[in-house]
Amino acid sequence: MLQDSLVIFQYIYKLLINNEELWLLIFPALISLELPLYLLIITGILRWSYRRKVIEIHQYPSVSVIITCYAEGKRIQTTIETLVEQIYPGYMEILIIVDGAIQNKETYQTAVYCKKKYQKISNKKISILPKWKRGGRVSTLNAGLSIAKGDIIINVDGDTSFDNDMIQNIIHEFRHKDVIASGGALRVRNQEQNILTKLQSLEYLLSMQAGKTGMAEWGVLNNISGAFGAFKKDILKQIGGWDTHTAEDLDLTVRLKQYKRRYPHNKLAYSTRAIGHTDVPDTLRGLVNQRLRWDGDLFFLYLRKHNKGLTPSLLGWGNFLFILMYG
Image (cartoon, rainbow, N blue to C red; front, top):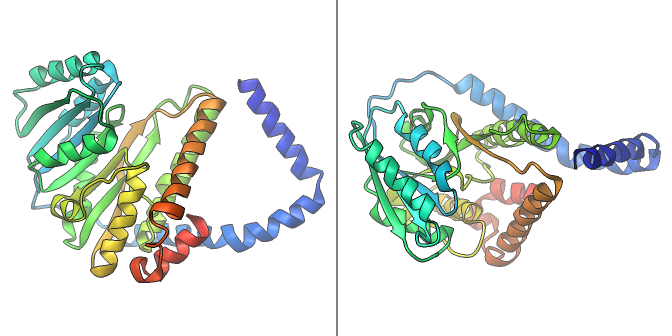
């Protein structure tokens, strides 16, 4: 598989080097479409760096972390442990929602084991909600939201791990009362596996972490990842929580933007220093299937579910033009 990938890259390289007409076609598109995006991101990063200050937090809102679990098995132990090890001094509850607990006994049993192991940890409470029948990711998230007691909701995937200052950093964004949600930075955990995972690691760093840092500074954050995001609970409930269909993270982001349009002072933030780690596809087939699924979700949401809602009046001109060009 690695050899096949190298052959493809060599073919593309030779095609670009030996085809002047192709360059004449590509170069104007790069200048007219990509250059404005790069300038927006670079200036946003510079603005973030200039505005960034080390500000001590004196108020620590209660936090509910919803872990969506399905077939992770023993891997959820790593996720739970990295949440238990958080240095956040405020109250935390860790809600382990096991979807299809009858079919996924290993996942459920691992959750029970972790609850017993960490039940005496101060200022942290672990709760398990087994959904005995398979209901899907959206119903799992909303089940967690229905029992969450924290002021801030953080949703995470059952196979994601975190730096121990993740919650401290992402809650830092909510020191501004106008911030209603914040994304967190994801990095590739299995980057050393092969050339594909190394390239995706670079992509996550440049496109997702650096890119979202710049976009958030100018108010056009494209998406709060479903693997790692934080929300004010009262706002999340007000807009109806997570919705059905597909790509619930992008759907929620679009609805938050529409809500924010009615209350222009509200903001969607991005916490560059709140770091989560995830595994990425390590085969070409897995990568292609993932990206086809992502692009299919984009088409469904933008062209069908939200086709009547993608207007300047609902999103504002900045977000509308950004989605039109880059969405």
